[in-house]
Image 1 (cartoon, one colour):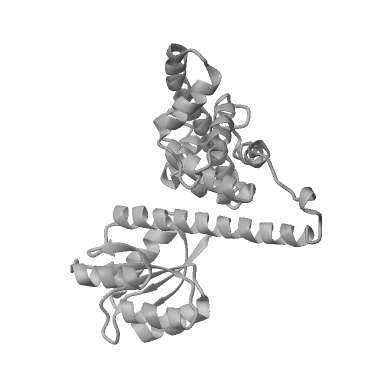
Image 2: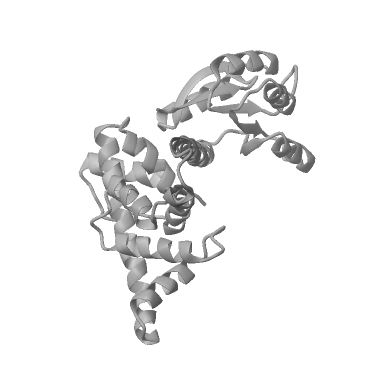
Length: 300
């Protein structure tokens, strides 16, 4: 499902421009707009949008007061502040009120798209992690009363293989490297954060090659295999999205594991029949998200 947006800004031209950018870029759907804080509160409580774009300075009450009022009434929308003011104190107050990002005025299409792609990405990650937690709670409920020795625990491979399969990269040789890396990370006592990429490659290489010189050569090969695997996955998701933008695999995996702007570029290439073969993939982001899913999947 596309994300829903509400826009609260006393400038009518700014509201219309933001609406066009959101909808023309495929970021989501604008379900309502208001020109002041009080109307904005009523609109947002009625519509319950996923994301709210809120002007900082409005005639009746400023954006921070409006956000505080909404949150006091149970609003759980994500907020992006719009402002031409760059006063440090005001910015700090806005972030303390719970905003995600700032968009500066005058409005710039590229900046708006860039900020909202990041907001969408963060929203998708949070939503998916909540779904995982909910599933785990249900699973624990089903297992209630079972002996401790019968507790269910999935292996790293059991968690990761279905994900790689759904993305369309399980047949790539880099998939083996991804599973190996996650197994090695999971085996460490401290799995709170993911080590730097170079360290991950070196860990995997050392597990393949006992000779240090051979392991050093393998590091570069691992990076190349990962890049090819992620390129295949991104291309597969772009092809799915081009055929069916509402496909659950596309809606879930494309913004969660990849930079969505790159997915859209690949979709345009495929649509125009001008595939260059060049794809920018963010290996660090992919592995970080996978690491989060792994921790949830094996109950850490």
